Image 1: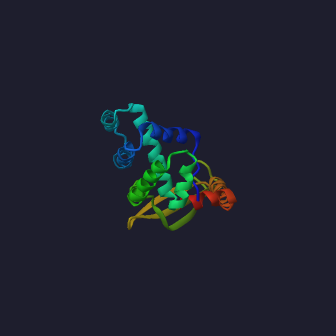
Image 2 (image 1 turned 120 degrees about the vertical axis):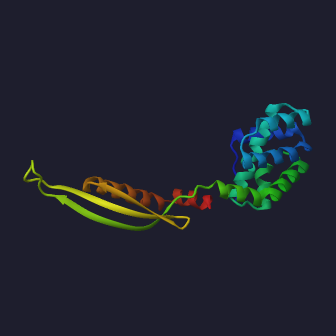
Length: 199
């Protein structure tokens, strides 16, 4: 599977040519540090002084490498597909080999970092529901006021929590229709392709 780069990403990666081959290792290290600890403008300034190049070139190079490495690691792109993906950039063979080695050396660590960044959402465990109907009150003798009470049990990291929700039947029917529509959209080819690429 090939990675398709936008013009903006190609321009950011094009700054690697201005930085030169020896700077790839330093920019790669900064890209992995960016994933680990977040943005570090001082690190870019220090690297720019050390390599005798402009700070903007370093920042664009780091951003381009970060995108390239994270997307390739997310999709688990093979060596051949990685080389074909960066071939469109027009880099020299030496620079392509350096980028490939950088990708292969950091692929597992980047996947580990990305898995830690993934939000841990609660999952469905069970559901209880009850239909309450108020037929009359002191002020109104004849009224019908239905309400659906739902107790949703969720589990997250082996912890159980319960959420109690209450709604009227018309809102519940609207919610059911929206959920069915969303499930129907998940069966389209476009959504299947997106889900397949996310794994």
